[in-house]
Length: 143
Image: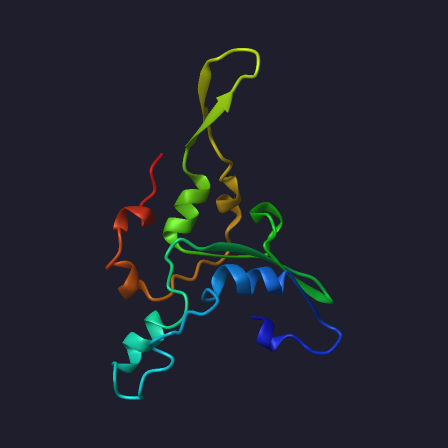
């Protein structure tokens, strides 16, 4: 996305954070990028090169002069996420609350908002063949 923005007046916000969270850790060598050309099938190398974590989610906001990365989903123009990443964002979570006036631990159910999904206009499901090899439950809707 950012490769197609017009330089030099275009600003990309949070790019350092994006590289830190979605790039390879420091000192790690990508075995697919550094392998000999015919060591792996081309489609295999393209699928697994770089950071291949399957729990990603990031919101993008496009303005006239900038691309903002890591925006809240409600204010995002584009959401790039894996099924697992979306599921982790919308699933009910239990939070532990420690009360400072009492020695008790209170476990409360906190439901995250997920009605941002109701305003989706276009959905692109890329590499569905890879998704079928993962946990298919992450793509199923539960009410």
